[in-house]
Length: 200
Image (tube, rainbow, N blue to C red; front, side, top):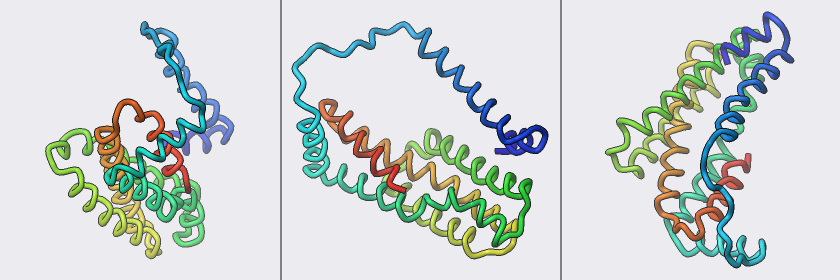
């Protein structure tokens, strides 16, 4: 976000999109140069409706999968929309200019990056359900702080805490889902995960 804000200030918003598009060349290069047989395995496949039903059935039959999908769905629907409301929060509640908003969003992004690193490092030995519960509680506290304060510094602290906990929650739920799901239906269940996560 800080780089994007600097580019927008120095050049234009279009420059931000151009640079962002260029960063995808790294991913394109990685996919183009990988040496792996990615052809689908030849086998009889049921129709798409039958596969969708199988995904729903796998989710309904397993209480852990069901809880993970319900949690990410409600989390996304009720909480994650704040990301899209942050420009309004910055301008209307905090009276921040473009630079101020950029810094506010950068604190959230920094928190998210640290949350992702934490979930994949020192939090790994701990019980995922416990970590996830406490991350949800701390996320609620951070988001409430961001929503209710009119002080930019306090809002930055709330955004940082929300960012850390956002990625801890998502990583914890996704890891649990991946480990719980059988290989035969993992792709279908992951499709349900994406629908639940994008509900906001």
